[in-house]
Length: 73
Image 1: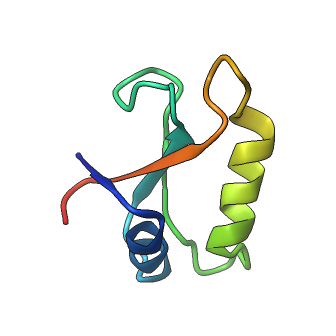
Image 2: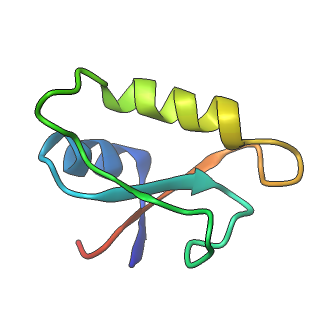
Image 3: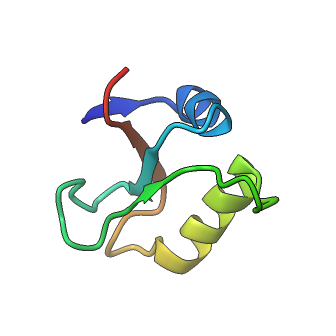
């Protein structure tokens, strides 16, 4: 698992690779994390996914920004 930039995460997501998008204070190996990948039938864009994750998961306790991880670069 490698920490990556938002641009790299967008590129990997659009290519169908799995990325992890979590609030900045959440541990990437914790129970509340998940890997996301672009499914063929969904019309979700990367920005829409990031906005959803930010809205529902970011708080002063968990962090007010998102960080991105890839399994391997």
